[in-house]
Length: 131
Image (cartoon, rainbow, N blue to C red; front, side, top):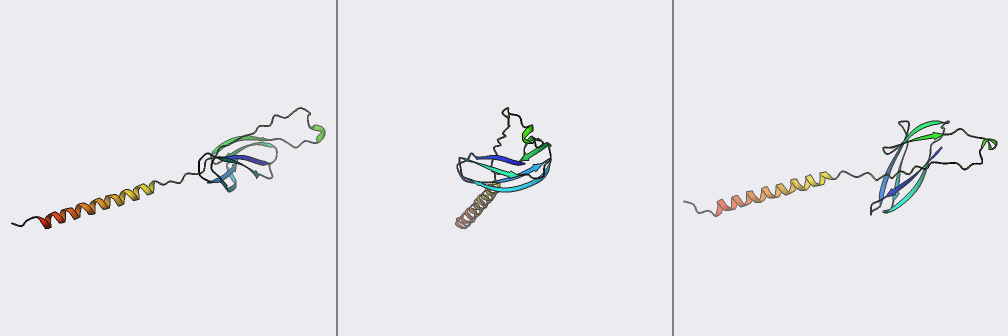
């Protein structure tokens, strides 16, 4: 069984997608895919050794139910067109948590304000006339 995914990068910049595929809750495959901004890319992941049955496929938290049909010989195949289902998942690249940058900048700003106020107080005391 092969799992085909269409990954779309909706942002302007190139992104790296961390793909994690689980079948019935068990992680089967991990991969990293690089996609340019405003483009889509189709990837195919082999999932081998699957007998006929129903499986829950999870890709980065998005779940879908997949039915694997038993193999047929040519005499068993119907001449009617098949109604194959295609699942398209839009997986966004993981966003890095960058809040720590804000807190570091805030800490430096508070430190500079404190040093400035301390300097102003010492300057005022030094320039104040003594009685």
